[in-house]
Image (cartoon, rainbow, N blue to C red; front, top):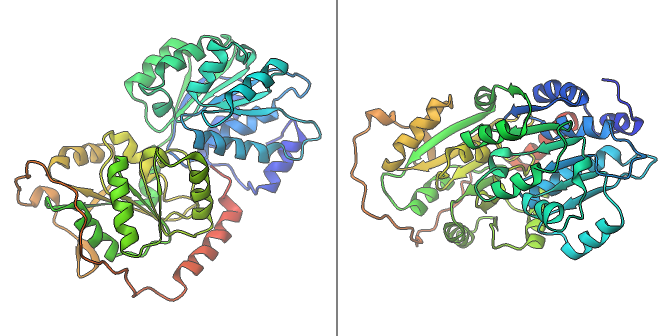
Length: 427
């Protein structure tokens, strides 16, 4: 592809693009023509660069006004987008004014700076953008030629929809509107009908693509305590790196404390962990200082841990769409990924729903510290679920397996680094 700005062309060579992902091949030409569209694509498919490349390639470097607004649901994802963006224009001879606006940025400083000048590219979360655009009227976003809504099924969730309505009302009808989401629930369709003029609908083969690289395994709890079941799962594996997902901060704290007591190398991230500590933990995970991370869904969207080999669902997410986001953390860069989910009798219809989406599930159990195939769910004897199973801390000590080949993690890291040179930035 021929680029308008040499700094973008230089960046493409520097970060090692040899070929575009399927999403990038579809989206880059559309945004280059300022088209409006909705893109359904799985997490990790390369969508971030699919909109950043054409946006930065078409910036008017002489215009000191807002030219692009990128909206993300979380501070972490917004920061990641900014990190990718800065790589694209670090060799530019002209200064490019890119600013991030989230709950983690200083509101007073943001307002004071905006009163003096406007950024060319804006990345932000709905709450802070609504504050600066509508309440304070200091961010003049109406001049934007590009508007991108990332991870839309979360950005357009019930917590943000009022702010998003306020934000979208300021953009001109001539702006290129683009929306990216792993799923397209009814709320998104209503929003698109309201604000997008005759958008193209791009649906990548999300389920098939996901199934190519991720093994989706399910372990029935048999109504036992979930910590006990988790203990047996962990006894049968030694992942390169894994995330254990929980639905609440309380269960995440319990699982993290138990794993620490058993001697696992484990970190914890949820909404009560402050921003500075979360960034520190992410750095430590990328440096492989922790083998496990226990997290709530704050980690399920848009944050990349290269080489993450396993996702463990201690509890299945309440919204099945989040199952795809969680499992999408693994199986990247042509590596296989493994998802292991604990489920019980009440989750049968939930798992049926996942299978109806085309997810190839397999049912396993732990026998003598090995993961083996279990009987198909429909063939298993029905069990009566206790009224209110509780999570309790086990006294049993679970030792990590020792029958792993020498230098397993070192060899995996070397393999990962080699693959990363070719594909690390294609997401």
